[in-house]
Image (tube, rainbow, N blue to C red):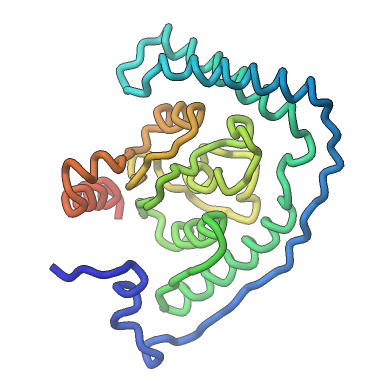
Length: 246
């Protein structure tokens, strides 16, 4: 078995003669300045509330067998936690949403063109937000695709469940249409089915985000699964789940 870094494996046989076109999309995204003034006693109260709620989370587990009473307790505590965090910073909501949508619309149309020309698109760049455009363009042309998400984060927040409001925590939820309200207005076509969606390497998933994952039916293989079963076994299982479509 050949071992190597991801970039080396991806580009081992990729010579300039095999590249039909190389495109670069780059946009300047201005940082929005938040003029937020918070009294020190407000911060102290927030931190105490946050710590109290976070400690209560340790009493809960994320197994699929969680009974309804425990689930209700879980969602209530996470709801209070998210609201208390968002109350501290009301200026950071949906930061740079317009610029992100403009970029993704351009990338989406470019990837569609590449596929229609009979080429294979390899998209590199930014954070996982760019995967919204590239993945949705792919499934628009190949409707029965599954998707494998290699990431320590599941990126399966919706905007209401996101503690920080950072949009890079939403891409997989958008690609599977679990997040239905933002970040995919440019797309007219099918979305990825959660039953054929796999997250490999999950280990840093927000507590309320776990609720979304469990509710959706997405499969998660954690870093612990990889350590106990081996990466080859996990990847084989992931491909089997995704390949139930195409």
